[in-house]
Length: 327
Image (cartoon, rainbow, N blue to C red; front, side, top):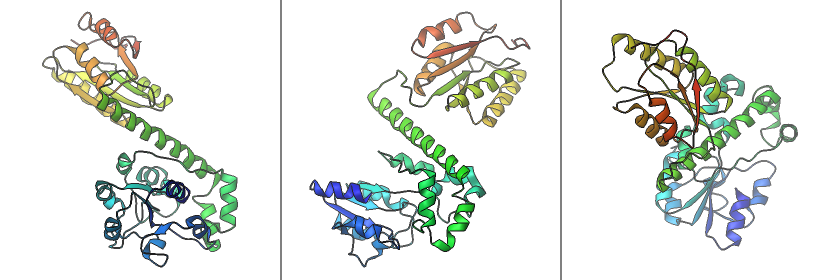
């Protein structure tokens, strides 16, 4: 963060360090160089605490915020003020530790040790225009830990028994790359929608399953969930209600929705008279990269029409479920 701030300052940009955490080895002091610190070198900014009102008064072109999971001088989370700072016209360069992100905390739980006091919701990352992973190899990280450069030497042993175990570090690196891919995917989808681009670009696979109200779809849902997991993508199951459903069909769809949610997927019901057209339109909306359908005994031509409408999407056609078909 400070290296980037220095480069921008050398190019003539007005840069202020609004919050930075110092360490016992003075590496931060060296990296700061002659960068301006909000309020001076004896201010709260040097303890990683940002004075939001003072920053708004200073109103630099670029502000550096070390540890976005931290607090401001009023004791409020820094993340609550980010939108306000952006509206003032500032560019913000911030740091955030992966273990302070909610999906990491919820997903890895006790493997990381005590739960952080402050957690940043993943939705906050939607505000980020550029995300960069700062990563070093586990052996080098362990060496820095031994030297007391990450936590005090008295806490090193406990850290190596929890968050710094090799298997935990490997899982964290995988989560980091996945988070980066998801962020890139969200930004790409937003750009495509702004530009009116409908053809799918494959950054993160999006698998869509077409679910008719027929018995036997359990195996198809499981197979599609497996496909999505293998592609490291998300599954969306879609059914089209083009007529009044029977009680049996409603029960089947309810069960299929439950199975989809259990597989970490999304279940959607569309209300249209033209099933093929509705499915194709929804596939465009979510920028699906893979479509899974089954051969059935329903309306003739629906499958053929869907394939014709989605010529640039991979369509997987599976056999009719073994239990047969319902009305």
